Every structure is written in C-alpha cells, then in structure tokens.
Length: 577
Image (cartoon, rainbow, N blue to C red; front, side):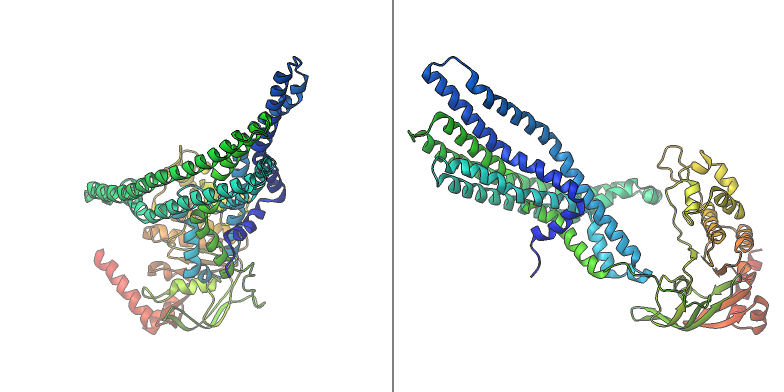
C-alpha cells in the first residue's frame, strides 16, 4: 500500500535539520495557541472589569496582571507572526536544497552515461524540472512545511475546544467538528482549483514556447528572415489566453463556493453566540472567552490544511521516490584492470535493436595519437564514449582510464569567465597552468582582447560580457584538453574538435595538442584527412568493426577504404583549387 501524503512529506521534512524544525515547531505551536490564550485572558480581563463596575470598586489593581499578560501575548504574537513566513520559507528552501543535492549526487554517481541517459531517469528528472510543478514557486519543501503546519493545527483546535467545553461540555466537540468539516471542504475546493490550473499548463507552456521564439537570440535570425513574428504572436496569444481563461473561470467558481464555507461558519458561530447569550449562568468574562475561542477556531480551520499542496508537490515527491529506486546509491566507477592499458576487447554495443559495434578490439599506446575514421554513423563517437568509460559494453571488455578527458564537437560553452572556462577541465590547476594551456593552443591573444580579459564572462547577457565565434570557442575547448593533459590526464579524446576552424588553424591546433599531450594517449576523430594523416596510427571503423589499422602511408599502399576516402577528399580539394 503506498504511503499517505503525510508520511511521504515527513521524510522530506527531516531534511531541514532538527534545530530548524524545532524552531518552526515552537513558533507555530505558539501562534496556534495564541488566539485561544488571548480569548481566555480577554475574558478574564472583561470579567474583572465587570466585577469592578458591579461592586463599585475604583481600584485598578485587579486588571493590571491580565492587561499586562494580554499586551505581552499580542506583542509576542505579532513579532512571531512576522517571523513565521521567513522561517517557514527557510525550512522549505533547506529541504529543496537537500533534495537537489541528493538527486545530483545520485545521478552523478551513476557509473556510465547510458545510465544517465536512461529514458526512465530522464522522465523523472523532467518531472522535477517541469513548469507544471513550479508555477506557484512552491516545491517539495513548501509542501512539507504546509503538511507539518496542518499536523500542528490540532493543537490550536484542541485548546479552543477545551475553552468551549468548560462552558457546556458538548460545545467544544461540536464546534471543532464543524471547523474540521468546513476546513476540509475548503481544502477540497482548492485541490480542484489546482487540478484545473495543472491542466492548463501544457497550453501555457506552448504559449511561452511560441513567445520565446520571438525574443530568443538563437531563433531571432530565422524568425525575422521568414517574417514569422505575427504568426508566432497569434499562436502564443491563443494558447496563453486559453490557459488564462480556464484559470480565471476556475478562480471565480472557487470564490463562489468559498462563500458557502463562510456562511457555514457564520451559522456555526451564530448558534454558539446565541447559546451563550441565552445562558444566564455564564459570566461576562466567560462570554468574551467563548467568543474568542470560536474566532480562533475559525482562523485555524480556514488556514490551509495541506491537502491542496498535493496537487503541486506530490508529482515531484513521487518522482524523487522513483529516482531513488533507479539510482539507489553511490556506485563506484569501473576500476582499471591494473594493466595500465586502455583497450577494447571484442566489444559489442548498440542502441536498442541497432547494433553499432560488433566485436571491436583496440589497444592504445601511451603518448600515441590514434585517429579514428569512418562514414557518418559508423560508431566513432560511441567508440570514444566506451574508451572514456561513459558507456559500458553489451559484450566484451573495456579497460578504461579514470583520468580521461574528452572534447566533443558539441562541447559546452559555459557562462563563466574565460579563465574558468578553461580551468573547469582541472579545478585543481594553478593560474600559471591555465594560462599555459591557453598559450599552448594559441588562445591567449583572443582572451586578452576581451573587455575584461581573463575575467570576462563569456555571454552577451552580462554587463561587460563577451561572446566568441565558433572557432574561438573551439580554441578554449582545446585549451581545456591541454590543461587536462598538463594535470595528469592519460587519455585525451578529440571528437571533431576543430570543425569550426579553417584548415590552417586546425593543423596548427593539432600540432599544438601533439606538443602538450605528454604521455597521454590521444584519440582523434575527424573527417579532415589533412589532419588525420599526421596521426601516429589510423584505424578505419566500418560495419561495426575495425577493418584497417596502420599509418597513413601503410593504409594508402593497402588501397582499401581509407585510401578511397583520402583520394576522394583530395580530389575535391584539387577541383576547388
């Protein structure tokens, strides 16, 4: 049987830390009991004033103590009430931060990239990031805090109930029952409202996506060239207007239904007040206390009882539960076999029913540059990910190197400073090592021309920020590879790392990488044979297997697939010339 919402949220609540939870508990308990305490003290004060008037006593000594206590309660209540929301938000933020940290550690601990790319894992992570769950800026933390508060409301209801029962025993239970029923009815209305709002999120998301295309820098060129602004605007307005209309209609219906709740409370309170007024044995002070207790019950029952947060936070709670099952804990990465080799032996690998590699065997030599060539879809990038341990083979064995570093064609462009964009490859690197890596690939000059030099944030979104061309970004990516080699990486994988560079710049970059590689094995994947021919060794991947292996001259002499591809590309250059 699945755990109840209250039990599910309890586990997350403990992530906030016991001191924070204890502070919130004491504060909330005081605020829940305070209305009843104020009612009791007010009743006592009114009773003493009435007694003084009846006896004709002129002294004020009898009211000093209850008056001082009433003032202290009101002042303390107002001060703590002002602290309640910030403290609750802080507890919620700590819970959300703990959940994010846990999920990050679990996903990062997955030993291979294919485990991270698993459809089930990605679906749950998408649920956690979905705007459907964040439209109110509330998350698991806020849901846990509301649930916690809902559990404490019983303390406030019980104290108010005891005050009413001290007058007539059944008044307390009867009024508390009415309070709970009306409160739960109101919570059910809010749950229904949240369902309507959640149902509008797909339309709202589509509308935001259409609107974003009009202003996003990535899409701006084609939007203007093709004259799509008006067309996109109509689609955006249609989707957003539809979502807004449904939400407004639901909100109006909610307000109408809430009137029935308030009328129910008015009827309940009226019955109690009439009963008190017609009871000749009740003192003036007790009447005041009873009125205050009924008001306290109204305030407590009308506050959210937590059920409404199910619609907002429960999908995220369930997603976290499933992620915990999919990524159960810290898993050590595959350990090297102790031979010091980086090798594939009879490796099989595929995506679904599509077999990409079919018995590949390859051993890398320290300090050697090995080029991998083949047609698109031959499995070159898959081979690189197996060598770096990002994928596990479906058959055969892989001896990987834990200090591997890779530069892919779609390398990251971090919104960090130029310095951090390089240093991120080896956070332990010194300033001198970072600058030497940039110099090694010829990136120093372009960095120094930036508005703030090394400290320039590489994004036009920031003041004094800078942006780079595709070729300049690739130089920074290659600088990261050079830094990784300088800091001990034993394997560098360069998968189409110079696609945005011209031929001369590519040859220069390749020569520089050769100079700084040290004892690291280098795997180069490129379609430009002018660069590939300079590798120490070239392997041809075809049909899921390595079909040729040798130097440039050896493969040309063999007259196989490599020779055919090389001569075809050379002929194209000759014809262009």
